[in-house]
Length: 209
Image (cartoon, rainbow, N blue to C red; front, top):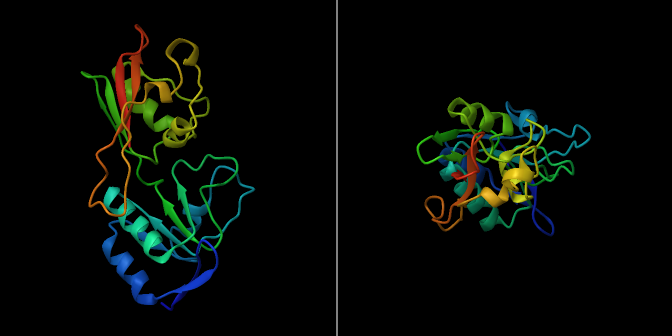
């Protein structure tokens, strides 16, 4: 492995080999370079017209991985793109020549049927969410297309089949979790959304992280 040429916010720079090796050693997930396993899978998104090529992809498996990737971006002043569900039509999930933080492998959805809440990782799609929630006869207002990511949909408001009755996705959001480069874990702020059964108005909270 040699030093890597990577884009910063206003130029390009060399990312030393040892810096990249250190990132690989700290991630539970993988670091993928052009031509390596996982690279093309990470950069391929729903809009097939987008064909951007990051210099390096951090394929995160948890919040600690995200923090390490964000620390690298901050310390090296790197151009960054963040992929969650990868459904954004403009292709903002992928950048040319910079660092791509890939969250698409973080797809866990954990539903608590008693409190009617769920914790949703940032790579989860609507299909992932519905599969888990419907096992308990629950739902929350989401979008139309099952391949849409829950995180991006929520941050954009979230209009779906049941919105007229239960509101937007973001109306049902309770607490978000954010990853900050100075933290050792996700920050304390968490966002939540309401989830409901088909029998009554939405009263259950779903936390998306």
